[in-house]
Image 1 (tube, helix red, strand yellow):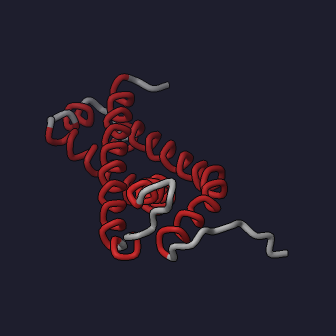
Image 2: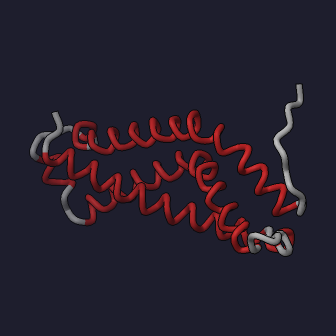
Length: 153
């Protein structure tokens, strides 16, 4: 049964995870676009502009980056949650009151388990469906050719 302190730690962890995840994914997507800006120029066709293709690339690349960097986001979110509890002087009263350190961090562990299960779900359910679309956009952006899924068998 989750008590008030566990819910508080859990909500702080989830808030930190979302903030760090969005920040890191945004930074990585921007750096990826800047690094490949030379190859992207001229990828637009009659119907869409180069910016449209770049936005599609970022939208399709984000789940792959999320799966790749989710362990680091989880670690940083846990560290910032504990640092926030210490900075707000909310940690010491809980431990002095008799709650063990592992029990005091139960909300954090629950959040980390939830993040891991969510990452596995994205990897197993979402990424296989996005792979052909991502390959098509990648082919259009970097080789300036249309990509068609072929049956290789």
